[in-house]
Amino acid sequence: MTKIEDEFSRFEYEGWERVADKYDSVWSSLTRQFIPHLVNAARVSLGMSVLDVACGPGYVSDAIRKLGAIPMGIDFSEQMVAIAKKMFPGIRFAQGDAQKLFCDDASFDRVLINFGLLHLSHPEQACAEAFRVLRSSGKFGFTVWAPPPQSPGAKIVNDAIEAHADLNVQLPEGPPRYLYDQKEACRAVLERAGFDGYSMIYETRSVEWHLPTARYFFEAERDAGVRTTGLLARQSPERLNAIRTAIENGVRRFARGNEFVIPMAAHIVVASKS
Ligand SMILES: C[S@@+](CC[C@H](N)C(=O)[O-])C[C@H]1O[C@@H](n2cnc3c(N)ncnc32)[C@H](O)[C@@H]1O
Image (cartoon, rainbow, N blue to C red; front, side, top):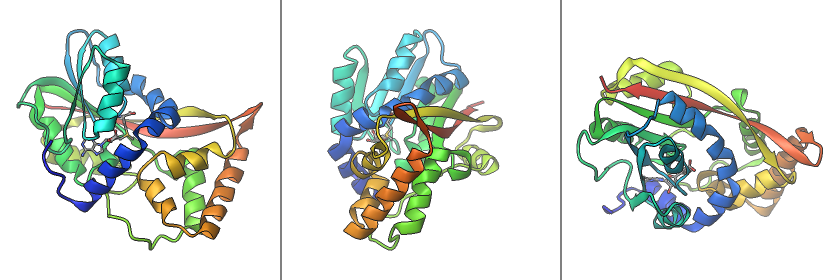
């Protein structure tokens, strides 16, 4: 893979290398729930060649294969690629940068990115790369998290961080956490990358994340991600404790039987290369 040049990408790379196993066991029960919406909106079908960018453990690629299409997964984390190869041995996975794809021009019918764009230092560059590697009339589809007003789960964490975290800690600057949460701004980004803005589908989907304990969400944020994990790692013990308590209290409001069921929302976006 090409050298990682900027500080945010290095932070992300080191983070994903560290938490790849945990991400799969902790978060993928949530992020996988959006895959059917993404592949449906992008109209993936039999025989298509589909690039799964920032593929992580490979679940999008697996869903593509189950539809009779031909997936290839790319992720810059060696650990993630190793997990994906082990989980889905029949699928091709390779290490590579979403912002500098090693693929030829016009070589795919679909490019999909499930919750990858907010982890890139230059998400617009990844959109431009998706455009380059798509055949004409191919489609680019991605998911991004919906912001707190639309997503109770995001609101729990956001409120706890706003109330108790020191936000002035040293962290490399990345794109907004709720990247492309405005429909028209998102259309403009896609048009700048070359896509047909009128073709854009922009829908918001909500799923239920079932948590076994009230503490699970806090521990997921503290131990199994990169951006929020980095912020929490830089808090004093007192602040961390206050954030933990606030998140636990927020989660308790969603108790259902022996578990906690948190509504989480994301935007599904698809645009065509005309
Ligand atoms: C939140 S995970 C999503 C994984 C997967 N798409 C899913 O739905 O479970 C984000 C992924 O983006 C990958 N990633 C971050 N920056 C990247 C980059 N510049 N190029 C390729 N992959 C990247 C990480 O290694 C990680 O696997």
